[in-house]
Length: 570
Image 1: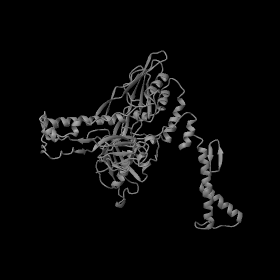
Image 2: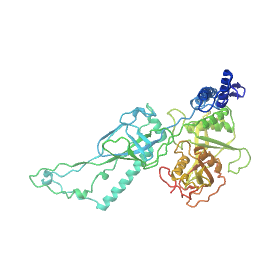
Image 3: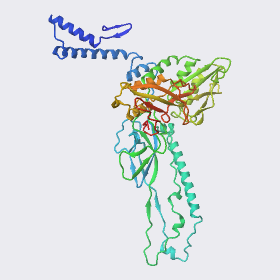
Image 4: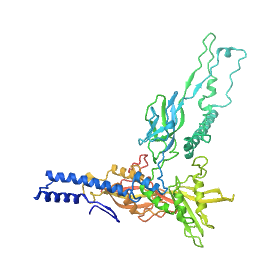
């Protein structure tokens, strides 16, 4: 094809075309046949010049393509969509509460003023890591020390004095005291869990980074009950009386290891799955730090940066933003809000309830990614996300149109409330009540048969599908090897072709022979190759435990294990 710019776009010559053009030009200039064998000097020179020419053409083509949203990529795409007021949704960090146990006074260095930096340069920054090697940084510097336990021993003067009181008898038996101590321990552990949950609420973390009178302060760490650091009083009553003339024994001073809960931030930005009990290794060894451990999942799981494909799709939807009163307007405006992953609006314009149970003349708004009820998510004095959704419904909903919702939905073995409501004040001083539903995830299990593309119907066992191949496949399905995990869009059906395409895009040497689905939560699963049709408010997400991978030519390797690293196969 020629080098030309027409109304159909830019076309450039290919490498073979340029090589043939150069060879023809050399033969015409020298008027004789030239040796263009593979290793000849003339052929090597032609290839070098042709490759340089192709590189220049490809660069020109990239510059030309960057002028269009359809073909632009990366930061150039950000510049193009910004012309229409659309901005790429950025990534965010993952935060988790970690218990740090010490046996002496310790100074721990945190990020402090460098909390938002991707690669902070902080000397001696206290860092921990989980079982997969993911590192986490301490948010705020702290000086901590264990509790000092001081046991008072009666002095000789007090013991020999006529006014010395008789040793106080313990009002409890040892069994009663132990029961009280156990109850105090349970209450304290419950308070610690509540503290860990409160300390890392999504919006609290955001507010900690802000200064001013509205800055939210950290919740107070629960105080450990005194009974947990004491010994049974009956044991102290049996202390032997010192004889006259002997020195008074010194008051023994002992230290216990004490655990403190601190907020840590993942070193890498984006969505990171953090399981309880997996962060146990300090990266930099500090004397006095006995152990680290996370008793709960990440309280705030980060999000990945919006991909080029999703940004383009949202850009095209933005063309309907200025409109008023249409389903597309509500959907695109809600989807353009921060922290909203996807939004769907369904309309029932008939006079009767439809097959989904949606009432007549109503819209059904479903949002994935919005915060739960009562959670603030913005700076003081600005709209919350919930208020922003209500404003969209107030502006774009047509008069007399009902807002349909359902109250609850099954999620696993639980039933959750997914109905959201928010009220805003209208210009006439009255309240407008907005209603919508939160999207939920529904587990989908896979039973697939895979193998290498070049091994089907062969006896070459050296290329058999190994456990390592299965591990790579499972990591891809879970999104742990880069990219997105296997899941479907809000309300979209799951088909075997989706799994074929997902695996072949990530593993070109893998061949998927069969795909079956199940959504049964019990041990017994009914497998079927048919489409899985979720509810309109459900997102189908691949679930590891309970899925099965079979291989060719090897026999069935069994049900996927529940190990924390995502390794598959028993």
